[in-house]
Image 1: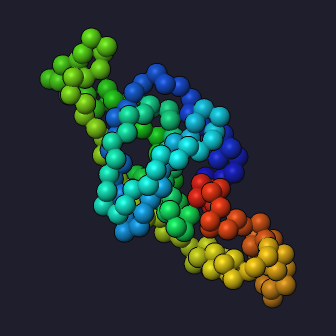
Image 2: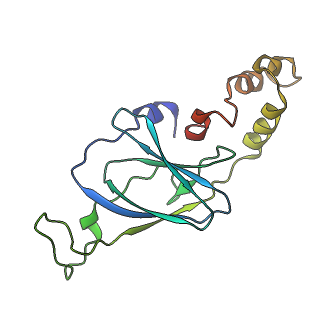
Length: 166
């Protein structure tokens, strides 16, 4: 996903409910973010390895999952951003509806959070960045100018923004 698409990422409406179960299938702690109507990332907490959380959300509400410690983005259904399906897409016709039009028994969609494979280049840049005390030190390294700029502009892994858009 490029930066233009990232900047347009936001929740649209709350018309169609979605009931999901986020399941951490990684061996790392995962941080969950819902992207609100203004495009801000709202922290929904952390999932330990093998843990899950039930979330009531909406069909046009994007979710992002990142490694709590490294900031690497995880994938859901081979995508970096998860958009839930409306509840009625998987509704069992034998499951009766309540007066408000929702099912009496909620059927949650299992959403499996899996590892994203970082490139050797990304891992190398992160490792080098950790060794730099100041961003400007990137320009002292004997590497191509484009990599110097990229290193200088990279956020440190402890910065909240890197968790969202590394």
